[in-house]
Length: 139
Image (cartoon, rainbow, N blue to C red; front, side):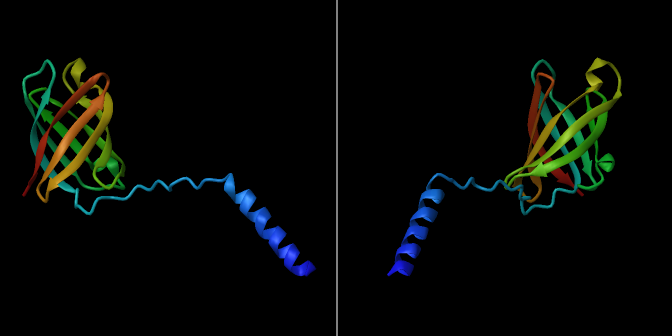
């Protein structure tokens, strides 16, 4: 009888200790099942500017210095450093460090959301600026 009472007491203690704890959902960065590497081109809109073109070459998610972006119309260029992905979008840190004028310096975040096998939605945010558009796979 003592053994049964001890087991019952142990089960109650475990239940009481476990009641105050809540398991937090595990946050994971899962890449979309989509091949993002390659060359992308599109037309972007940004407040106070005429629409302009972008060409991005994503060579590697591991070696970000190889990922080059060029903006036509504003004549700026830089690199995209891969930050990670959610189930819906790839995220990159953009560093613009080449081009003419004050508009060609800065950083921000680019999100590329797959729309089809050959098209992605582009959204940039950084330095009180946002731009958006749709890019198509080249080649």
